[in-house]
Image 1 (cartoon, rainbow, N blue to C red):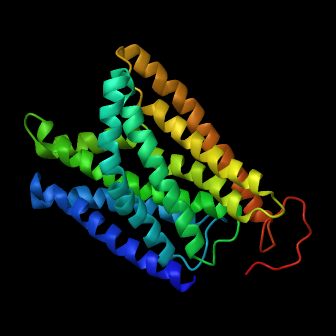
Image 2: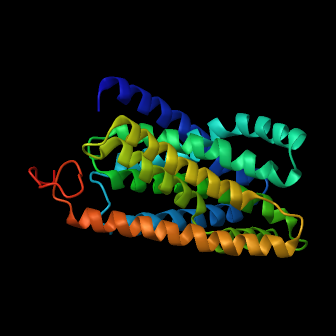
Length: 284
């Protein structure tokens, strides 16, 4: 990592750390200390399980502590900082000039995926252990995980007081809904964007146009899927059909990308991945 990138990385880590810490402590404004600790414990377990599964995969890049921390803080901190101002403006524009059903689509899909994609690109440039296309997928998943866990904690905090008799039940119900109705969506969306960014940065013998197309194309796929997921039809039946159709699109697509990345990582012995190329450098 050169000095210029290192300085910016530390600045972003500091800002992201402050924002993430503020978000994680925000439940204390609404919930009791025990409920806040329980809410944070659920989030911590969620993150730990995903990271352990990723570490067991051939996609994992070592050493990991700093890039994992940077990715989580970008997702949970810097992305939030970038999204909040633009999300409000986008919401107002969408509400003024478009149907109400699209307000959340624009407010979520547009600023969030761009903010996360920028973080993925920046983090990939900051660490020398990233040198293969699937590392973009890996970093994207962790960046999205940071965003998702922060968002889930905020929603669970607000959901606590909505239960008529118990803040605990309100918080747990909200957590359960977030875990069951679209689990890991932010991680998946960011992972798909990262898949394209990884190819743009690390594929060998690609033209500039092909690299730009890969990064922009997969980031657009992430935005489009996020946009569609946030669409709010007026009919409950239409909403259930929408969720079912999108689930049968998003998860199989992500599984396919993971399968490709997993297979390539298992078979790779070169420093820079090139389909069909003879390996001349050993794995670092």
